[in-house]
Length: 182
Image (cartoon, rainbow, N blue to C red; front, side, top):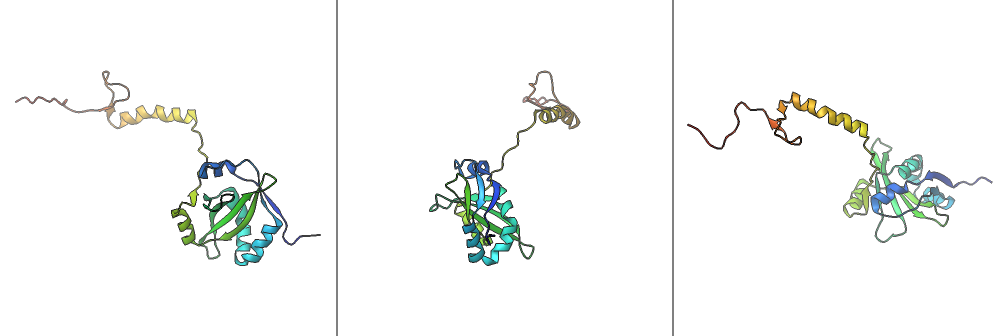
């Protein structure tokens, strides 16, 4: 028997990104769209369904904003702008909550207006996603640091023997003296 609204497993939820952004302690798990939620969106948000289904994977895996409404402590929202029907960017919200399997179920997904997105941001209900910082490689740091003396020499800077390494002086034709001679 083929279900009209099949369940969909979207893959691993980016819990590290969510935890960093909104300060939760979610455990690793899969993002799932149940038959029930699939049916809900198709019937209750028919104008949003086709467009949102095309981009739901991107919204769940790489959200631009993550939030949690104060009165909805069990669930959270992932938001992202997606290409709209007229070439405009359309914000999409995906509401999720932990399930009994240790995974994360999509409760609903729908388009929101730009003013709703702005309102959620100003009230602090959503925050810009904090992406993982990539560690800086030592080799590239060393090459940048080694290039500094060359840059300074070309900029007409010199290091005098009495000057510590961290202090730079500019070449002047006459040294400054607090006493004026006449």
